[in-house]
Image (cartoon, rainbow, N blue to C red; front, side, top):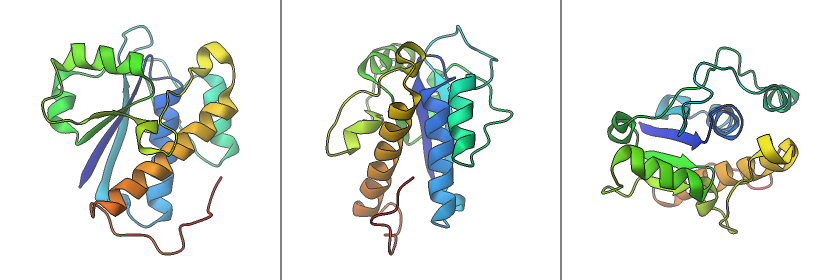
Length: 165
């Protein structure tokens, strides 16, 4: 089983969007039983809060329901528990390294490091642009699944090319 934890600053926008997008992608591929997918924050400021309304709206527009998801802060234990800790941006990585005490097993990446254009996912809390965040997260999740296929961590999907949201 591959265990993935998505991380952003507050765990109310980008990381829960990534959590539900990837859960849907692996379900569509018939691979749900091969994954454990969750999300968390580097900060404490949103702990216990639900997914931010505009993020919740865009998830629902795509048939994904984040009901029941509340923000939590990542812990040092998460580093031991998860195989991949995927950050939304470089700033998150700095905070993740502070929380975990380092990355000796090389588990921490930005989600878009797996894409053809590695970059940060801008925080829609500040930009208000949830559609671009959605597109970036979909791109990152598809690229990450492609990486897992190429490295033999999951079986290659037939007919995956060209499917988008």
